[in-house]
Image 1 (spheres, one colour):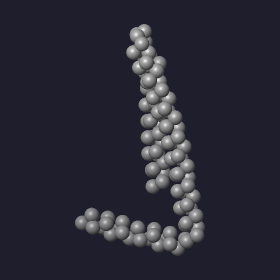
Image 2 (cartoon, rainbow, N blue to C red):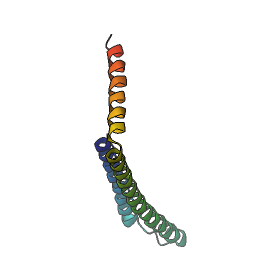
Image 3 (tube, rainbow, N blue to C red):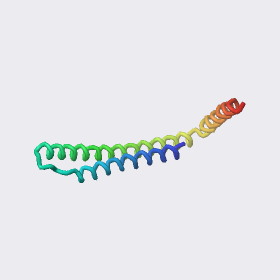
Image 4 (cartoon, rainbow, N blue to C red):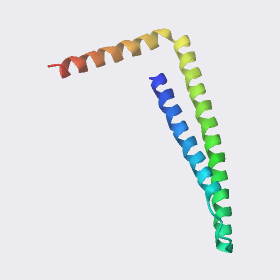
Length: 105
């Protein structure tokens, strides 16, 4: 399950990164019509784009840190109480097996 989560997280982060790149390319391609309003709008867009990129970088860092912490905590718990982990896994297997056997009828 964690591999699936990691794959989905990576895809989402790549999508967000691509959107930011596209927005930056659009900003660079924007034609400045020379008016004061146009310049102000372009400056505002650049500031918002910079802010979005900074927030993306912080979010990515936070997600990676939390994922590592959760994995470490799970690993520690399994090593501290292996019989509990086996019991939970067995219970999940029984419940899943019962569910699948009822669905197959």
